[in-house]
Image (cartoon, rainbow, N blue to C red; front, side, top):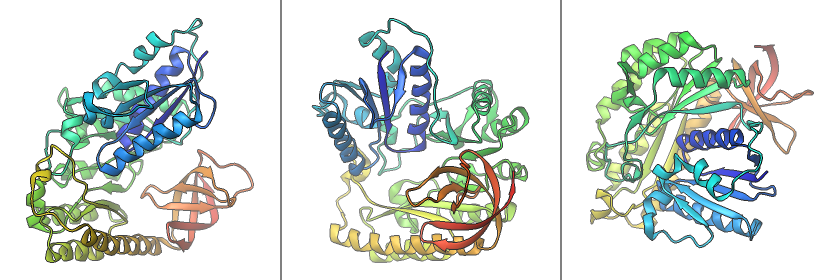
Length: 416
């Protein structure tokens, strides 16, 4: 039996794909191990959304090669897709793009055939399972490389998705995260995203269902009405990217600030205890001090539960890479510091508003200081003390002391 290690960089979609790979390899008879263990085969599923992501992929390859100089290393995912035949990664024995990734198990079997192909046990390492429902994007935001590396749009069938969710529940998972490149564009056999969610709620008993990122124009009143069912996590991730209409236009984003604000208000009217998180890009070409001030002011006033700020990363081949009005790197760094401070304050304020409230927490793992951590449905990171292992259980807790990155629970109110 060959030991195989799987590693992931990037988004929830990548995590879903790596999880699916793990199941296929286990069913084929390979033994899954940690990247830190003794492996014969190492596979890295990569991201290329920024130049930092590219650098992380190359660094992770070097780490893997130092860990096992004679092992077989496969590089796949969006970085492999973006680099094409010109990618330079001397530490990789095999490079597979995103289309080839779908047949990765057969590629490895041809190179490392098993004498005994009895299925191995797939051991999950998380309490949440990421399930891909859709792939591909053709929005072509001017800064984004994703339409070039995930260009083939497709959606899974409703029955297929529901079958997988029921299997994950049978394995003991407590939460499912529906993910994809653009899940708001899901459509299959007459079902849109709202129809899919309604079917999942009717035909599964998974305790929690969470959605990955949505665009403002994809969030409709019929969709929001489904959140009357408390199995749906009261958390929306709705990327903003800029608080300036002028910059949103240059980015080719499919909404204005007025559109975004209307959707934000609609979400909060329909789901009063909801958390909304967002992404912000700082230093997009042409961004002036006034444009940045609009972004900063919006983050300071919008009441986001969490904000993920990113410095603009030029991706060769995108339309934004051809813009000439670049922002000075020193200016970008200064603006990013200001946005990160605003993001930290927003997160702290949201946590403060939750102090002394009771919320359900799905517990995950133990940290070095002895505290356990888990997440509420609105995605607050909660810490707690336990005498017995609480992993993969849901308990109702009272939230007490606020930390920089979460809330400490003072007591277990009840087990769910």
